[in-house]
Length: 318
Image: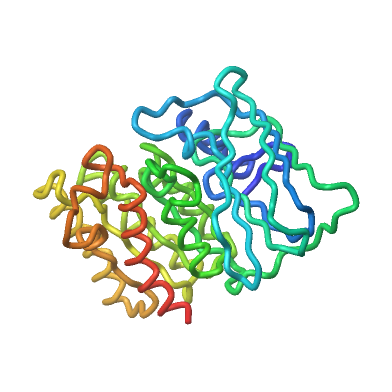
């Protein structure tokens, strides 16, 4: 997760770029989507306290996704969900304790809230407990995601169920989530910033946020080309929007624009470029069960998106 120069502030973008962004995008940069805390400990409990920024009160998303911290633990590389830690409805602050079954050394993973920023964060363990570095990711350089509210995590019931977080656990990879709800529109300054990041792969997934097909066409190839000029060997995955059925004619036009970026890249000799058809992401059966509002995925929708992307990204990175 990218941070500001001020390390006491949780932010997904560096300080120098914030004044150059629209107000809404700048505000969303303080949401902690993609942020994770990993370590190992033999403490028999964890106590998490936190004060969150103002609740965005998203219409369909549950409290778990907006305000929750997702706690996972495991041994031998296998992580299991333990508890989503939620704020008190009266105070808005989080003060939650979770007791483990043993005092053996265990891997800890905490996913941060998807749609809120953090004012204060503290973690308590049993006095005298070991605090050890986490096991290194199998894929240490991050997979970077740039995209819409779907990329940011709307409307997963809790942070660990968003598709970037599912992929992070399945791939055993570090990630940066640069999904900005309603506000990732192919900004050139963000393309230039992302091109400078150290990364193992890049997922370009902002189709849903481009206001019109014309704007998508104007920005998409240029965004890809900016990344490619700086990172000639980087695997890049072009993804069209998953809610294909909502406006089929519009989705067909948008998909063709993204396919054209793929075609032009291929014609220029790009062998590190892949296209993922958004129409395939929800599968074939019960597609209408994959969203909460015919657009944003629920947990089933995110699982299906992650399954398709995993099959492609895993093969490429292996």
